[in-house]
Amino acid sequence: MKWGKGYAWNPVAFLDRQKDPDDPELAQEGFIVTSVDYIKSFDGPLKTVSFTPVLLPAYSHVNEDSWEPENMNVAGRLYLLLYDTDIDFLFLARGSRTDRYGVDFSRNITTNFEIHGEFAYIRDYEKNVLDANGRKLQIQSDVKSYLIGIRHLTSFDLTTIIEYYHNGTGYSEGEMKDFYALINRGYETYKATGDSTSLIHTRNMAEAGYGRFSPMRDYLYVRLSQKEPFNILYYTPSLTLNMNLDDRSYSLTPELLYTGITNLELRLRAGVIIGTRNTEFGEKQNDYRIELRAGYYF
Figure 1 (cartoon, helix red, strand yellow):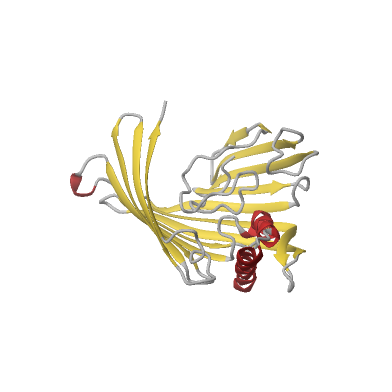
Figure 2: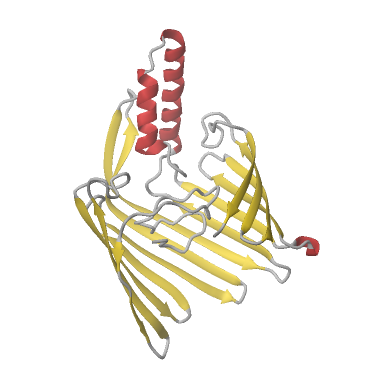
């Protein structure tokens, strides 16, 4: 459905798969849904109103990979173009997931300067955490997530995107350190005895929440992209910072995009991970990486 105005994160995207902030433009598999659009235009400050009701079924072999089965999920979006500001009101009724409500906006302050934001409220959110003994514990609470960001384009085609994201469903620094400690204990046990039970438990906890994208609470995203620098046609270099503000770890991703061949896109990317032990990026499997991607469109 691609709900939300954010670039790297979308807390109001109740029906979408979570973005990878390291590559937010990467195409993702969608879900099977039924939706309609009603659009009405007006004169005056309110230019446009549209309403999009959505049905997302979750049954055997239908969306069951991400949604609790045997539910018909009802969601909707009300869009307003009011005083030249794009505004969305969104909801997801209780079904496979708990009730969720959200609002987002986007407005061009000037021709080349845009500000956007999102706010999401989730009722009875169930978070899987570890107790003092390393056992799985489920905590239920109402949570709030929000995002604020800007996008600016200079006269020489330098695009800057800056976003701050607060993840109300995320883990605290202490909760993540407990998870990393569980991994370390499980690995030491496996080396000493060959017993992988603890590692299997760790994997299950990662799948239950600890291993998702942006698992903690506060993040900063900065992306600089220069189109065709020095009049070098078809090349766009960029640099991206994705920083965890809780533990101060981060990743830097320089990238070079080439689009000089019709329907073909070549992307050369590197990744540098900075972080100490027991931090989100410091615990990644690699410190550096380089990759070349080719995309052909037809």
